[in-house]
Image (cartoon, rainbow, N blue to C red; front, side, top):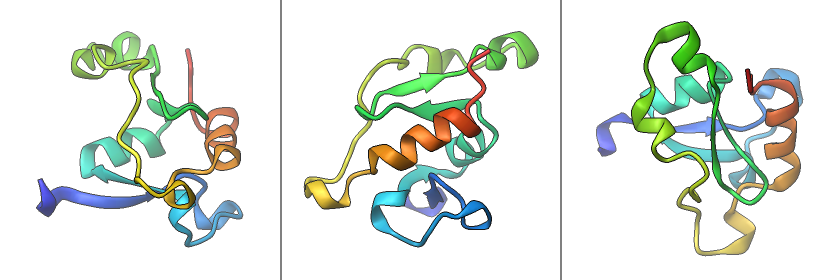
Length: 98
């Protein structure tokens, strides 16, 4: 799926994010949009979170609900993994749990 992969900022530049490996996730373009719109999130243990809005507002998202709670793929090198501080910011500020 290389043609549709994008680097997604966990904390975007306009709100204090930086161009850093630990502030990014490599995602398919559709997943990137869902993360930016708060429909998907990642907790500090790198587990996928899925907003109930996908089902309640849009009537879909089954492929994501099936993977909710599973750990996402992360880089082998610990310093390259998503930083917990950025993931927590995204959950508090962007992710729409309900």
